[in-house]
Amino acid sequence: MFTLLCSLTFPDGQVVTGKLHALSANEDYPVTYDGAVARLPERVDVTDEGGLRIFFKTLARETGAQYHETSTGEYERWAQ
Amino acid sequence: MQFTRPTPFAEAIEKLGNRSPIVSQLTSAEWRDVPVALRERAFFSSRVESARFLQRGRDAITDLLTGARETLPNGQVALKAGSRAAVIRRLQEFAVAEGLGPLLPEDQGTIKDITSERRLGLIVDTQVRQAHDFGYWKQGMDADVLDEFPAQRFVRVQDVEEARDAHVPYEDQVALKTDLDFWTRINEDFGVPWGPWGWGCGHDVEDVDRAEAEELGLLQPGQRVKPVEQDFNARLQASTRGLEPDLLAKLRAELGEQVVIEGDTIRWRDQRTTLDTVLRELGLDKKAKASADDMRRLREELKEANPARAKDVISSISGADSETGLTADKINAAVQEFLDYVPPALVARLPKISIDVKALPDANGSYWKGRMELRTDLSQSELKRVVHHEMMHWIHLDGSPEYRAAIKTHFEARTAGEAVQQLPGYSSDIVGKKDDWFDSYAGRIYSGLGDKGEGWEVPTRYIEWLTKSPDEMARRWNDPTFRETLKIVLTALF
Image 1 (cartoon, each protein chain N blue to C red):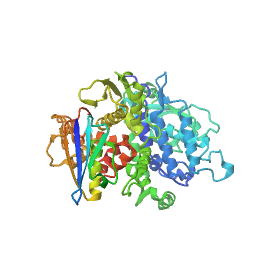
Image 2 (image 1 turned 45 degrees about the horizontal axis):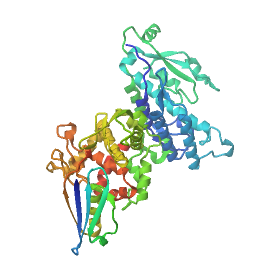
Image 3 (image 1 turned 90 degrees about the vertical axis):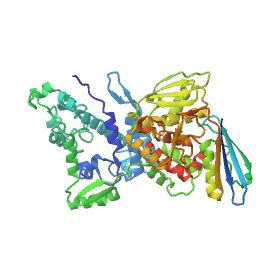
Image 4 (image 1 turned 180 degrees about the vertical axis):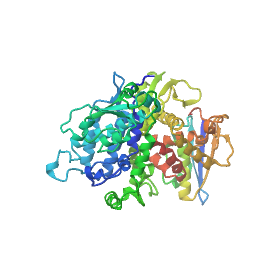
């Protein structure tokens, strides 16, 4: 199982994270949020690895927050 | 060696697809003053000033040539019954919606009325025949074909209401195919050495073999005939040079920005539909933040008017299983969804695909040289994305070298100086350049394969964007880094 954790650190120190567990690199999975969720102007409920990354990076650009990501594990299948 | 009459579709489609839609108030007679080289590269109809209509017309007829054909029992390839009527009906509806129509009420329903079946039928028939006949001519210029059938006979194949006197002396005459003067003299209306031989003309040509041509004294026994395609192209080029200032002034006034005049030379401005023109038309070229509605419109605009059919692209499906839910019908539908975006002319140049549905240890699907594999237990939504992914390999790896080069150049520019590493989320044998791709898999490298195996997963991962919800499409589109790569990937669809 592949896990991607994206986080934003706002200038005031507050942090919000979004986490996605995925078996397949091509499919959408639910995103779970934690931390200062109220700071997010919108939320993406389901997406894939790339979608979550772009969502958080866009928020970082728009809010001045700092973007960080970590990932663990492996996908079980992918299109090749 | 015996030759049958060759099928001219690739040439015919290319010919029509390269024509620029040209709007003008010129009448048929006035169009004859326009140099042949320009007429040959234009899609026009007298006194039609709607670029959208001409664009739609050209695309519909190109699609008609590409997608709606069938092989008759005698081996000839022909347009499917009903296809012509459907295209005319579609153009009729579009012309009416665009507010096109005759200037005078009494012209309604006549040849002067662009919404009339008669006029549209003439446009479709002439364009289809020009494209076909050019294809036959071009293939007839092949050195081996020319050696076997060096001449052709001008014959009447259809009675017409008003037979033109000028063609009577040529009936049943035989001349070498390479006699450009002879054949262009017959074709007063279009000025080319292939048919149709005039508006509403009922003549055609039939091949004459070497024995008969020699008997008629058109060439000596064993004499080789040199193809004249280059000679004719040189004539076309010459027709655009050394033009009288009066004619240039008239063409400038009538055709405006559509032509480029440099000295005494004239040419069409390049107006082919590109991704950029589509984005400009939708206002997306300058919009800071696209909406989901913008993406819906863009996705619709990217679709073909008459796409290739999945059943004509898939050569076989094996292993489809109703128990797991991955049926042939579902696979066909997923392939069709992708084909809806692909120009039929491109599809015509690509190999057919055989599809195997099977248990795959760690893959959802794969593609290599006309063979696609799909995992047995793909869900409906996964099937769509995986088929888009694998069919993009089909376009990228088996399509144009220019597209492959563009992807490779982009990949190299983005990843210059980066080390190859194991890609996060994948097994140790999956390596590449992680870069700032939205998804690291786009950076995968297949060592030891063509193009050094670089950039092969860029088109595939980015094209999956088309399968996303409009909201998700917009989020990705609004990311400048994603959009930069996506725009390069999408050029494959033009």
